[in-house]
Image: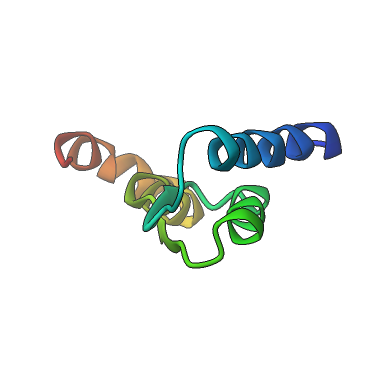
Length: 80
C-alpha cells in the first residue's frame, strides 16, 4: 500500500513537470491510482483522464470465480 510519502512524491513529480517542461496535458492514462489523478487535477485541471484498459480488464477478471478466470487466461494473453 502506498503511504503519504509516496503520494507526496507523485505530487512533486507532477509539479516538476509543470515548472520545468510541460505547459498543458490534454490526456492522461493511468491505472486508477487516486493520488495520481488528484495530483493531475491540482496542477493540470483541464486534463482528461482515461483508465488503462489493461488494468481495468485485469481488475474485472480478478473478481470472477477462479474456475472461470483460469479458463480465460489463454484468451486474455492472446489479446492486446
